[in-house]
Length: 291
Ligand SMILES: O=P(O)(O)OC[C@H]1O[C@@H](O)[C@H](O)[C@@H](O)[C@@H]1O
Image 1 (cartoon, protein in one colour):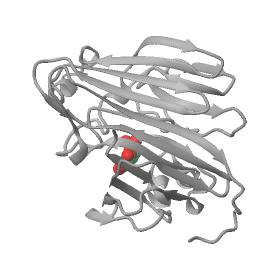
Image 2 (cartoon, helix red, strand yellow; image 1 turned 180 degrees about the vertical axis):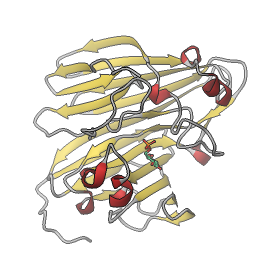
Image 3 (cartoon, protein in one colour; image 1 turned 120 degrees about the vertical axis):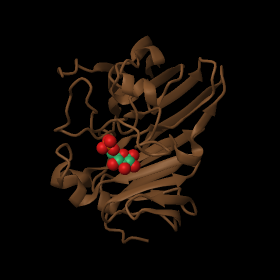
């Protein structure tokens, strides 16, 4: 393993940002006038072939250990492979980069065996008043395939125990902590310990943060799954790149297509999933009691 090269830096009037070529992994986005929005572990490994803890990892072509289980590495091989830069453009109000990955980049036999298909993936990242990511996958081979995907954003929060996530009321979900299928969200989601939920939901989501006085809005396109994850104190303590105190500082709200929402592509078909993030400052009273 060697150290990752420095990330690529982006700057325009409306934002700054940073991306590692490994995994086309956005690690920073700061819209002008706001505090950083993406959480990056201060103790994450920045080594070739190792997942980075924070930012927006891209999970592909499977999520966790895959729809049927047993796949490795966790969350697919795309997040630890070097993606190719196709183009890069900047204007006054937006900085943009296009990354590309294809089956030709998958050189590990174990990875080829688990996903023996020809594909071409593009990730378009735009830094501006919004952070926008669009992941497009094309079947360039002659056989159909299914894949899973997630844009696994780590969002900075003032204190995860004080935030609420709006937009999932009524959605069914799989609770991975309780190992229960067919749960239904009632009202807003709040956090008091380990939370790992895979929602069937296409809707937009808001993370209301009274401590930082802001709302993070997530708008999804062609995404049937929203994953919400926070390790809680105990699991975090066992994770060297989160630690006993780090878990309160972030929440993951992921735009995804997993399990029943896995994407089926016939030869020459393309699927694109979008994830857009924006920030609004609020005047909400931090002392407001939970609803
Ligand atoms: O440690 P990793 O591989 O980055 O995964 C972090 C988490 O990612 C979430 O998306 C999963 O639902 C969790 O189960 C998992 O623990």
